[in-house]
Length: 163
Image 1 (tube, one colour):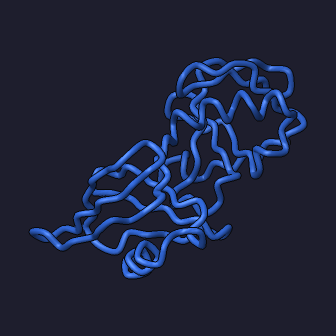
Image 2 (tube, rainbow, N blue to C red):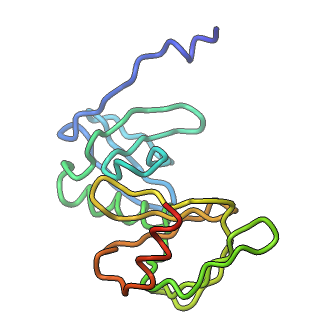
């Protein structure tokens, strides 16, 4: 077995981490006073614990923040700026239709960015622990339903079919 399989998880103490700059999908991170530039923040999939962030430099894992919300407010804001770019997810506000077309489900939805059409392979709605829903299309793009309880009855029924 390769040595990378035996490496220990490095859990980072949010008090020892400062995110000093954001450049699109990368950040500069200071850990215990050591500056590391060009770090890619990523969330583990499925997005069932959106507070967890894993930092990578190239293919090497630098460490894991179990809850990035515990960072100081400036670092948290800087990190969230990069995460919004990495995890750009349109918010579904209404489901107009879901049809079975040639082995795929074709969705028509209204999002916060306008009307969208996308396809999924199967039941593709994941319920997050906080009640939000994530829908993944055939190209692995994600859509979020922030407040499923506020949707109209038809949207709720269609989404429930796909869970």
